[in-house]
Amino acid sequence: MQKRGVRETRAQLPELLAAAARGEGTVVTRHGRPLAALLPPEAAEVWETHQRRQAEQARRQAAADEQRARRDAWESELVHPVAVVVRYHGDPASDDPLYLREADQIPRPRRELRDLVEQLRPDYRSWMVEAWYEDDPRRPSPDSARCRNTARHRYDWQDLGTANVLHLLDAEGNTLARTEFDGPVWMSGDPDAEP
Image: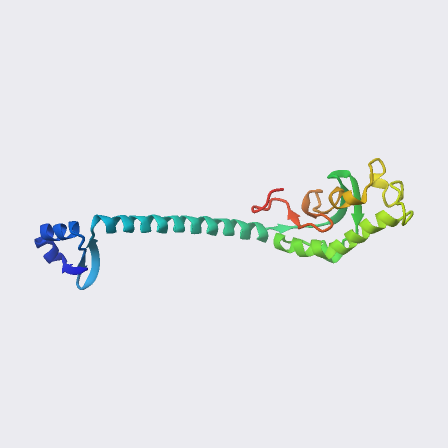
């Protein structure tokens, strides 16, 4: 690709345009530095495609940065867990409380809730197993004291993981986070997850 200064380009513009039509490109320089280019039509199409790709990459990066900023802001928001319960089929009337240490009942960023739920999961699993075995290891009864909240329902071990769900609550009783027996931790308002 040939090079021409700005003054030369002005003086030789018809010839340089004809050269571009023949497939020869010209770089226009100012003080020895590239300023612009006269390109053949095929090269211009390649350049336009490159520019479109660059713009698309920039758009995707901006969207990813915005999403990351939203998530960081959401995860940094302070929440105040005050209670943890096992809730049957999402019915607050069925709440059976689990123990939440006073030291854990403090305002904290949302990002710390998953770790707190994972700390509570063993107690939750123990509750599930006790509910299953409380009256008779061979044939658990839905009328046991441990199962008092589910006595009006058909109690089925295969259904335990989806029916009895651990909920971490704030002072107003809103669910901050929840999880099933072996499931992931879901957090209310998570911008990257569906409820």
